[in-house]
Length: 147
Image (cartoon, rainbow, N blue to C red; front, side, top):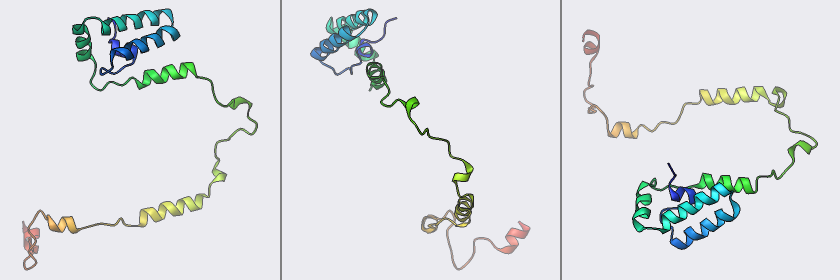
């Protein structure tokens, strides 16, 4: 089963005929023979009968974006490393326990755990699940002790 022509060309469904031809030329010039043949098939599918194009538009995933494919093409074309990491003098080392002030870390953790969070009780008072009557409590001691 052949893929959707929009996916083959890496174009959105709203693309015009000129952009389809331009993308086909790019793929035909830079791609391998198999990629060129598939791109030609995709171009013919999209520029041929309008019914075929509408069918492919309907079968394409909504909002499809082929960023991953474009990134793979870019990486293949310009995939060399900007810095030769192996030739650098002074290689970076992983941090050691001696690089940290463990007492300061422990103090910061302790202070964070002992500090109570700020609480805003206004929403609980405004929308209380039980009506709040200050004259009479909702439960009495005997209700709690004896049910």
